[in-house]
Image (cartoon, rainbow, N blue to C red; front, side):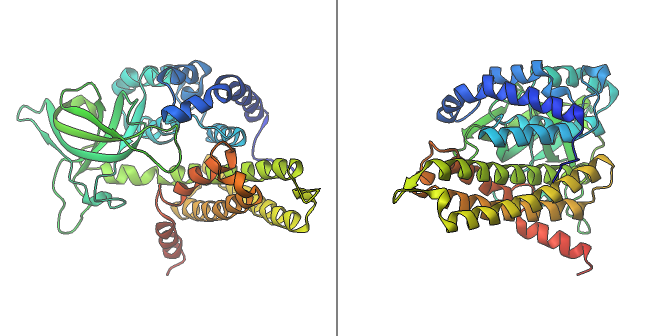
Length: 385
């Protein structure tokens, strides 16, 4: 069926991204995998290409677009080529919405030009050791100085994507203890300069997948954060975090759909070329039926994603809508990619094949941004259950 979610501008952008991936990423991607991260200067190239400024207002050096669909195009093209842009997705997909929504004009003038150019890469630090998805249980504190000029930050964070290369990190910390009535009270957001004394990057974590995305542990020991680097109002951090979750979950749904579609493409190519018992693997009925089932699942994911993208651009994507899209697409993609790997036989288990990397990369989709179990709870609540 003809896809209508993207217009001519989106498709022109797709061609630009596809050419960029072919020339700047594919030839060196194996080196990135071996290093365990994309090189820092790659982010300057993304800045020069304009990727980081798509949704940034023109007055701060961006293009001023409001459609999230450009980010969806990037996600689809990376999956299609079997590559990623490292930790840059957090820079634009997770951090930028907070800066646009809650930064003052003065803060935007200070932060956004370097954000757009890639001179300053951003990460966001929410999760702490031992707390997982329970953000209300965070222990990191930020105590205001007596003169009110700065906050003193102490604590630790883990699973911070982009944490190795980050120049600034949006850190969630307690400026007041929780109340008996509300465990979520007293959380604030700070935009922390990673060059600050007492700020430390711990281990670069070794993950099952997403090998080119730098993920780290962070620690803060009496880090002085200027009061002017408080993001939004003190004590409202938890509500801010919740407001960006629909877009974050939509992005994960888009990624899962794109990975499933890519898996079918990789499997089709492989079974047409691979010969067993004197016949191509594609000639067996089981292969045809398996791929037919996979294509039907991909078509269903595409319909869900496209509807959600339109709803998001119209400002109508609800938390339950996003949870449903993420749940369906991530669970479906897991099944599709598993079937496509099976069709590769033993070669599907070899990391030199993109299907193996895709299998590992996809698994986290059912965990981060809220687990599938959390998504089911959200959807069930929206049903009145």
